[in-house]
Image (cartoon, rainbow, N blue to C red; front, side):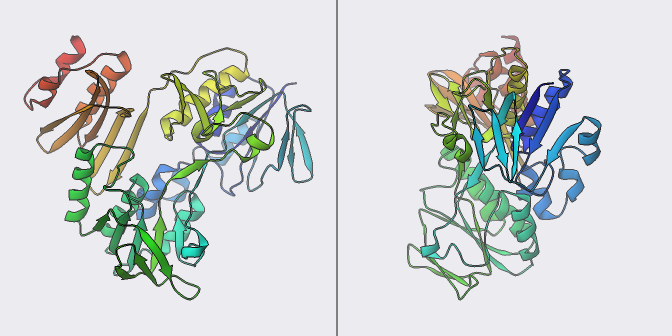
Length: 401
């Protein structure tokens, strides 16, 4: 009987084991996670779960009974120490498990502040895991002061929750503008205005010099000399793919675990999917940090573990909830040379073009614009920029062109 092992019990790992069973695989499946919790949704942690609007059992991807019913050996709270690709084994504590095919869905680890600037003080948190969210939730008391370091989506989502809870919120972003790495200036402007309207103090082009406090953080000094009193700090300065196991096993690494379009690594018996995987796209290797990618790439990995030889065609999509704004993103805006803004009845969307071709959209409370742009992007079509900019134009007609 074939034995498949999946290391990493997140969205991609769950996608693999679910797909294996759905495709009729009746061999042994072992899913190993280093967190104590069973596989869960990560996006709500910095949104509805942190706000208190989503209970714990709702973030689990499957009820515990599912793993029993599907005969999946779910091992949580334990770390794999090594992989032996020659012997086709993984070492888990004092156990050695054999595999016929192995999948790595080890995700990513958050960057942390260095200890020399106070990153090791109590009250300094990252926002990546359920344990992180559980540690932060009790700190969200009305009137408390929080410093958020990093103006990406995680930092902005945490700022929105904190502001809604009545905290005094200061967010610092070392770059010239929030969302600089992932969005246009127009999208940055939109969310800057949104957060400012809700009382968040945004400091762009300003970094953190040091945190202060005896044991527990109590203050911060910014690079412009500003001194802040803070009760706690949330750090959202990006993530790095977790390639530690893959690297020690001798797999190719390049901004993630290198795979082909079949999610196969440099070892033909080992696959990778999700945030940790670097795959070919537009002539280079990229990683996509999203739920959609984890699910879709996990499905591809599972099918190819079964020998189906299916290639991955990414259809990137993302979302963020901040206050009463739902941001939906389709496509990848990297390399855009034009942004067209569309506004209509309170909805706003930013359409990204490269050499006249529509490549991405940021849609704020504009589900219709998002849906149409997403379908155009996935079909390889484009949209006349003048028509997009005209608020009374019928976008749906673009799908018939």
